[in-house]
Length: 411
Ligand SMILES: [Zn+2]
Image 1 (spheres, rainbow, N blue to C red):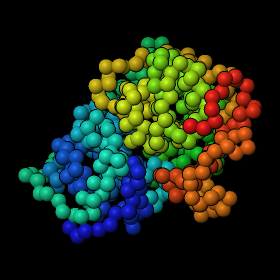
Image 2 (image 1 turned 180 degrees about the horizontal axis):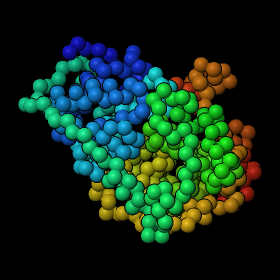
Image 3 (image 1 turned 90 degrees about the vertical axis):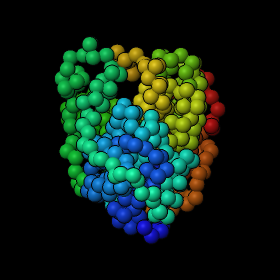
Image 4 (image 1 turned 120 degrees about the vertical axis):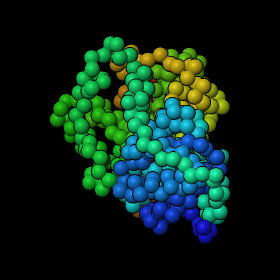
């Protein structure tokens, strides 16, 4: 094939505009290049609801098949399902066709290899790009086979292994909650807007439903449901930043002295809670590939990002061998609520995180990252790796925080 330029490769995945940056030709080449670089025998392919995802997945699969790779297509799914299928079925790799929460004219891919180890710019993404661009592929001894795989029952079983079902009455149908579903039907035209729960206009629907039904909390997912955001019982949005601290405190109860990996954007709350819980906080670059890498290096029990990505040692952020440390299921009965000291509960409303479209962000410097104190608050402005925007991060005013012993301002 002719050499071409592929511009969509980012630090830890591929995202590009359809069709100028990502199209069937590019997807086919990436399938061939992935096969050339990873030399897998069996690969999982999944896709999100975007209108372009099915065609791109088909072209990607053709590239893999023409390279002699057997393809196991798990169809429409979340990104984590591809990761799960890859490690649970002992595949040699997995590729998810998704652009997560980007606008509808975007699509992309996330890549892992055996054990669901991420392939990032540091460990192969650039090689795959170079091979795909050059378009010189080795002919295989024979072409691969394509299989359709239904992984969902096994995936649900795995997720349910995290909770103690013996104490729960099945209702929904597995957990004792009544879910009030909002915008629940998959629709690749995004009739309710871009599936990014961080956008303020996307808060209205879950909060209205929460108030109408006097629900206990609301949960909002992004386009490939690898991120979720929570609203409290009053409809207050809880920044992903604070969920990192919440989950860290729960994991430290189970694994005293454990290591918690976090991203470098907002750190105060996480550092406080990890110190209070007797754990060790370890900072990593943002992005799933980097966080998972650091978790493996330091044997982290849990890793979290303020972008609401969460990583668990039991879920393939590491080797399948990590199953040896299988954690105890969470008992029913609101353990998470108890894990948040009351004095922290009012903080989320006062923290700020604003997404600025690049083109309209006059008040924000065009180049980043800017970091440091803003008044008494910790404030950082950084370009976003995964969408065309700048984000300003601000913590709550530390003067209003009541708990003693807070640690240093920056990290
Ligand atoms: Zn996502």
